[in-house]
Image (cartoon, rainbow, N blue to C red; front, side, top):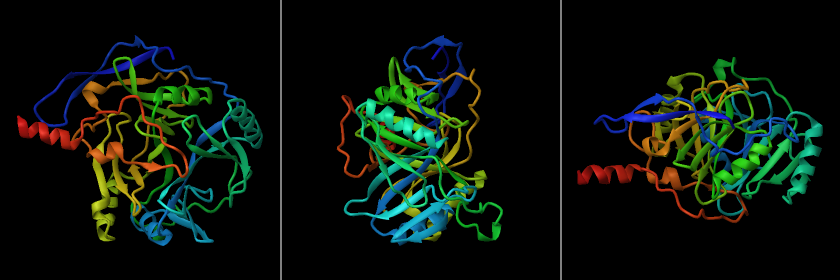
Length: 363
């Protein structure tokens, strides 16, 4: 990957959660796998999530009233939702669960129809599942599995509908604009990073402990994230994330959650992330699926940009200010329906709120 800019901790004060960072001189770092800048087919962005839920109506009301999503269509017991700035038919699909709620699939867009045929060849040559499926309001769709087992839809088109971002009289909740990224827990983030590097995913930022990769933030579109890979029992969907137009909407989503009876669903935040530096809040929906609302990313489209390394010892994925996340934020996630789980060789041991409080009690 070439030369890296490395962020290192230079000091810490007595206020919990605060630290000082400086930009170190570029240094050689061979940790990250190579990236194929001319991949075999062209994935353009993270596109959609299909969730299995116990009560579609209840979950729909959560995402509409609290998050501010728009329901494009409700048919055959399935709700198709999108953000206010999204023209394509859906970015979130809520389907009845046959058993335990789960993530059925995540989706990526490819640029051209011919990319789907190239993708099928690529996955089959890797010995990975790839089959054509019919999906409502999507063009030809290829269902594949990555090496972790995560189930992925690839499509090049959807039906198009008027964007709602100017229909202010219809806006509700946090006014979510569009789906941005997902975070996946996997047993081997480094190995899976190499796979997605073959597909042209570049790294914007990453967290490392010595020569061990802890988390990798990868992208295809021109901002810093489409796919985050973190260690844990997987594959599991840790969260998916929507952008909101104003910082105040991050606080508004908490107020709307309280108003509609979901006050205890606010799991982490509001806060500001270390990597990416965005303001955020995480909520759990009625079935425990985790959704993030945040303000927008910086651009990464320029080829000369280099990945930024964060030192796990100084950051531990905590926010720039505030308390560490509760333990369940690190270890609970949505399983992919019907996909067996794999345990990492070594489970992560992050600084959780519980551990932090215990340390304070002993001091």
